[in-house]
Amino acid sequence: MSRLVFQRALAVVYLVAFLSAALQFRALIGERGMLPVPAHLRRVPARAAPSLFRLRYSDRLFACTAWCGVLLAAALAAGAADRLPLAVAMAWWAALWVLYLSIVNVGQTWYGFGWESLLLEAGFLAILLGNERTSPPVVVLWLLRWLLFRVEFGAGLIKLRGDRCWRDLTCLDYHHETQPMPGPLSWWFHRLPRPLHRAETAANHAVQLGVPFLLFAPQPVASAAAGLIVATQLWLVLSGNFAWLNWLTIVLALPAVDASPLAARSLPDAPPWYQAVVLAVAAVLLALSYRPARNLLSRHQAMNRSYDPLHLVNSYGAFGSVSRVRYEVVVEGTDEAVAGEGTVWRAYGFKGKPGDVHRRPRQYAPYHLRLDWMMWFAALSPAYAAPWFPAFVERLLRGDRDTLRLLARNPFPDAPPVQVRALLYRYRYTTRAERRETGAWWHRTPVRQFLPPTRLR
Image 1: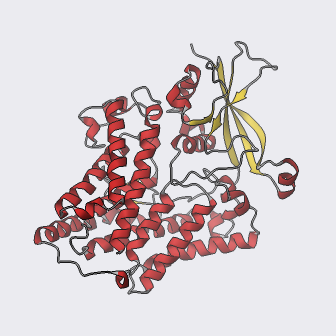
Image 2: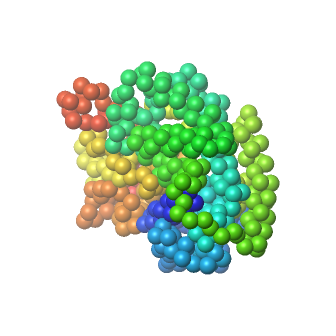
Image 3: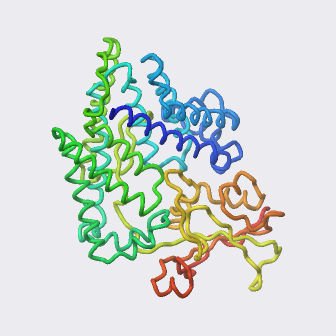
């Protein structure tokens, strides 16, 4: 039962990931995108980034790949693999993994997030889990616990070794306000009493540094440990937008839950060829686990690192440091040829990231708004934006339809602007009194110019 629920839930996460790729790729990595795939393939050797697109790339082929992934994942979520022979079911899961690996390995900056590797590592293990025609291999269920252990324990260690505020329990005084993409409840989370923030932080340390060891304990202790991890992840789901990271962590906790009382019938033993394949691959994965395990013990622990181009075994972690101040890049355009003090600038609206101070943050996770996330990094440092921001501005000046589809509001629906600029603002949540008086969720003050008025040459 745990395997069945895990596989169905993982297929749903796959579906969201492929849907995100299908709806956003043209402006980001398409042939005329900000970071085109063909140029990336010419720069990077095949052994460093294996992908089906090495054989041939076109936007039509990428779209076909992404939408095929959506359909395959939807069918798996509906239980199609359980009605097929074991070998065919494994091939189906393998096809899904290969398709998404091919996308991630050409995704460049837009796919440099830890949850991409996490989905690939979990998806590879799902290939070995079989279907309801055979009993699940215990070794793979233990490998899933090992993966969940690295996700949680790695995240806990990176905090303990990182920002001092994690050790003095003050990080959550800032985190809900400065996180990459706040959610609809983040304002209230930020306004919780500070003693409760201390309790949140201490509970986070306990769950991430202590509870993961209990995943390897006998039942029902392992089930209780998984339950605590799920509860913590649901708290994070309510407090922000982290794509499918939290949901995938919840999915990984499901195989640790003892669902044997719900089993309707016993399953036949696995065929010898299947057992041999599982044991051989498991041995390889355990050998590859040496470097991520060593990374956990290192004083220079790396976050979200892949040690092989197939993303088979990786290291994880997030928020080793927490920003104390939130900055946002606001992109504006004008249809006036000459900019002066009286020029009217109109702001573009993004779907997820803060902009209009009166707009309440929305819930988008587990869907991943890749441009919005990278705009958060751009506000931290222009260096993060250097590879793609000029191309983004150029596409706004050209009125590129694919780029405009990534935005919530285009202030120039009839014709593209003559000039575009970007300003850096400091954002903070309004106080309760300010919220009642103005109805605004944010208060912002200008900091400096991020990009001077720019036009097409």
